Structure formats: C-alpha cells, structure tokens
Length: 169
Image (cartoon, rainbow, N blue to C red; front, side, top):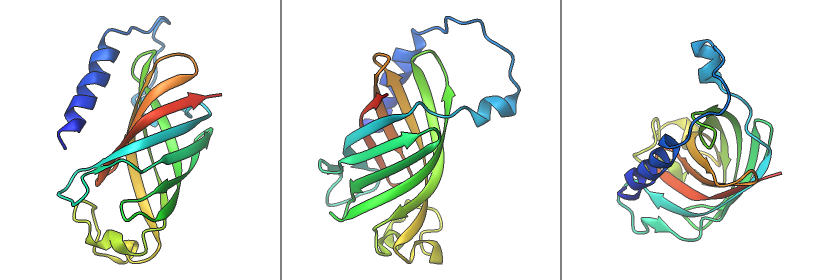
C-alpha cells in the first residue's frame, strides 16, 4: 500500500514538467472523459503488490503479459494463488500530457475458481459475480512514455497494483 503513493507521485512529478506541444483543441467534457484507443502494444508487468493484508503482499511472479490492439487487451498472468489466469479488457486512454496518460477499462477475468469471493477489497465480492471461474473486473492504469516505443506502466484494481513496461509497435 505504501508503494502506490510513491508511484503516483513519480508519475505526476514527471508529467508536471511535460507540456503538450500542440495547441489545445476544444473538446467536450464527455469526449475528453471517453478518451481514445490506446496505441497497439505489448505489456510486461512482472511485479504486483496487494492492497490488503496478505501472506504475500509483494508478488514477484505475477508476470502479467498482455497484447492490446486498439481498445482490446488480452492478457495472461500468474495470479495470487499461483494459478494461470487470463483477462480480456476494453480500454480507453486519456492523455494528460504528451508523455503521461491514464488508462481505464473493464472486462473479464478467468482462472480464480471462485476465490475472489473472499477478497474484501472487491465490491460485491460475496455475490454470484465472483462465485465461478469467470469474473468481472475493472481497473485504472498510469503510463509514462520514455520514448516513442517504450513506457513505464502501472495498473490497479481494488485488490492489487501491477507494474512494469509497455512496448508499442
């Protein structure tokens, strides 16, 4: 939990010094909030941290590996129970500066075998939504571009934050 404010501070401090080189065009509030499709790319986020007390608060073997095409992201990863899991997300990107952006989206998780019902950090955890092997999910991501092809990436949902790099093609 202590690492999230540090990561956010780092992202915001880096983005504060960046300015958009293009003149700002007027957009409606809803157009801005809806955002745009993320660039196509490959994510490798090997580290994760739980937000609640856990026997394993820092997960070194998450290996969240994802490919995204336009607004769709398909991922495979090692979950907190050391099981293979997959997710399918629909993502949108809001550009804050030329280098810093916020992603948000929702989709489905596969591979938790009903164990998410016991995770108090998840809203509606003790319902039929989390009783099976296919569960809904949502999250927010932060990205800071280091170059045209590589960025630092961090994703969070109610239970965990995952961080690593993204490569754009």
